[in-house]
Image (cartoon, rainbow, N blue to C red):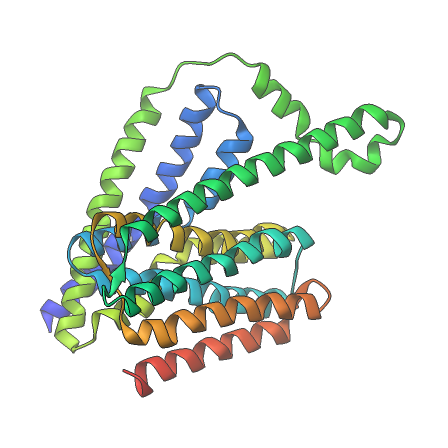
Length: 349
């Protein structure tokens, strides 16, 4: 009994360490990048894309390197299903509505669906070639696709900034109309003209400390989760799909819900779709380059298809509802997740 309580305490504490370390890492990396003269556009894209997904990535990587590969894949796939069905469902239900920009659907949402298909393609390839794991070639492709996606995002944002700046110069007499779009331009111009400043030793210290925190926290997280799974006879895949995936997705839940409540709906949707893309292409792509990531038949036939289904279904609902998720859509998504959890844990386990 005391052993179980101790493991639960270790699980909770290590989860808090991982989340806090991820926040410290992102905040101080941004400061170091700014000191080196790296564009805020690039920093924003990379930090926003990876920041909330560091707990999932760290857990999946440590689990895979430690031999708990089923748990590692489960964290990624489980997190993506939870992010879309659970987090968006909860957020839409509480806030009543999440408005979505067309670009979030046509670019980020579509990329999330494509990313899911890329994973399934390499899962199918590994299964039918009887290798039964994600190949190194698949790993390279995943990482390369993510790098290309980041490059595309940076160019797209730079293009948008150029259009806004041009509009600012041409329509000075209508400044109030576009004030919301150009209010950050002076800051961007200042960053471009600003000379490189010295890097604060404090920032370097916190990046190193956060990296160690992530490594130690994820190791403890996987150890406690693995021990609890063994104690209660829970399969590693189930532990990864639900307990770890929901726990490590707390940053996405906080960011998505708080953004939606403040009316920053694009951040809410962008966080979810961006995390889905990062979780697969980096969360599976990087570990697959280092160790064999096995392909379980049930993950191929059920979990991965559910991940694609809920992602694509959410995009369809958003388009059908006039580029928004309302409270009814949120309730539907939450019920979808409950049904998935029931089938996976009770029926198919």
